[in-house]
Length: 466
Image 1 (cartoon, rainbow, N blue to C red):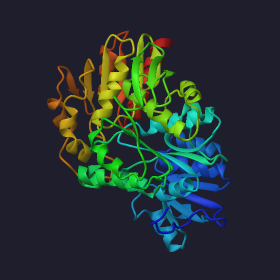
Image 2 (cartoon, rainbow, N blue to C red):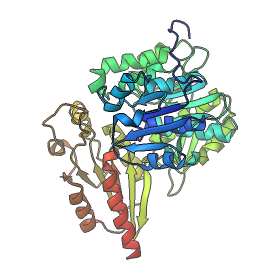
Image 3 (cartoon, rainbow, N blue to C red):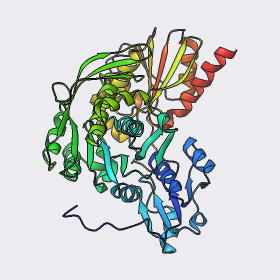
Image 4 (tube, rainbow, N blue to C red):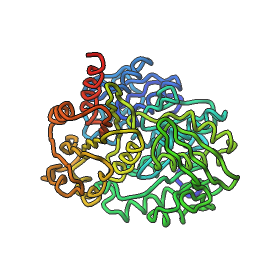
């Protein structure tokens, strides 16, 4: 693209062995999977095993638990996630051995910018929309490569894959400015609200970054943006072409939305005429994600009717309103929602399912984010019948100590039944004591809340067999 300096090539033919620090992360594990598809030798390290590291080991990756200088021995290139500090022992060893060191964003950019790229950006809905686009394009014959922030069941539970197709779908994360490395032909802006203010410093700086991202989309390509999001108006104006708008009253719109116990029906309005979509996903937010995804697929050359039909194949993503257990009249759902808006729309989606009571169990992510978005939480849980707040998840080294706690947040939430339970075993005990058949239990939060969801899933399964 004109005006850009020549990019450094990291994945040259001389690179045979890539070592990834933080390989168990969502983005890094996707990169690892894609590089395995390329035929490279992959090693990596992380602090603990996960379903992602287990899949990579099964494919031949060598993964170390814990960081050590010896882990980088033999590597031609070392990559690392944004969560890894510059003083990490493996990065230090790599530099001492004159092994090139690349960031997550640089590796994704090299893979992505070599293709006709479709980048999905926005505060909410990136993972879901990325999975939808990749699934629809596969079913319409375009079979794209993809790098997505969660395992996608409709894509063989992979989160990263390289194909011979000229197309590639990437979840373009704004955290640490990573998405500014990408040069998409097609981009989707799903939403924009204040987030990651610990990195950006202000909402204005975040909006400016999205403007730079929009300016980097090929002018001859397509920028698809949500029309009723005020903060997106400025960034979209920096796109060099004519934007494609979706949302209420926009050229891409929803004429009807009918939720059902198993499937939801969506009547689409498009510039090419109406289309009918049936999906197993609940929630109006997911309906809008589908509108954006289909618009992106049509921009890539997939026929509208085929794209709408193929949308049925998408069955969700890992930890996105995921059904974890259903037995004895109890249903357990898990979702990654870690922003108050995400919590609100996820609760609304869960409420569409038949239920007696809807439990909302939430663990906020980061004390700094909780502080920055404190007022946003007040009405986030109104759709639930009962709210339980776990203590804030604050990964070591991610942020300076702060006195803020979920105990401070609980009294500010506009709901008649809000409980602060700092320990997961307290929450499990409360559910075991009070849940009755017909209840839907929704667990929301970052990956750190997974042990709670696992414990509840095991208990529900035991009720059925006990």
